[in-house]
Amino acid sequence: MEFAPSLLALAGMHILMAMLPGPNTVVISWLSATRSRSDGLKAVAGVVLGSLIWVSFALWGVGALLLEAGWLYGLLRIAGAAYLVYIGVRMIHAGRTGAGTAPRAPPMMAGRSPFGTGFLTTLSNPKSAVFWTSAFLVAVPPHAPSWVYAGILAIVAAQSTLWYGAIALFFSTGFAQRLYMRITRYLDLLAGGVMIALGVKLAEEVRREVAVRTAS
Image 1 (cartoon, rainbow, N blue to C red):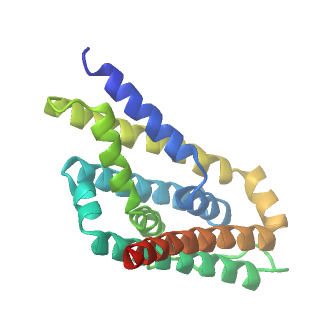
Image 2: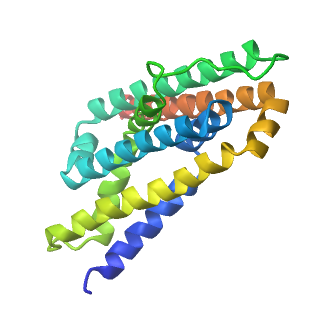
């Protein structure tokens, strides 16, 4: 098993990256707690598909091209930042309109589709393609056969489904939903604030890079 260490290394990097709290985790937990287990799992499906797209792009060298075409990479990240801020605003709006009321159906995002919300949230981070490009350069030998790349896609799909699916299942339990509804306003504001902060952080990274290039 010449390539087993490479697959294990990539699997470890991916699961650690998924476990870091980020937009995907916030969206899935929010939809699972405020809507239903079904909507949470639909968002998981969208996240998994989006992750596979970024990994596939990295396999095809798109991540390297994004770094070469700096302006395009910057535009994609600005678009992603705008989407994250939009999601955050919708979450905050849900918290304000639901304050002090019975359990409500919060406004949906991405065309009222939980799948679309998860999918677009994942696609809003083009840094994923760059990350995977770097990971492949480090962990995968250049002479790796095609089945290794198929194995990478399978690992990403399986680990994303298991990890984010577990989050959806937990936050859709009766206990988690009852707890969420007791402090729903504050958690919606917190979730929305996190999404907005992530969007602003992404936009600020682009601004600093542009400033450095302009000054040099």
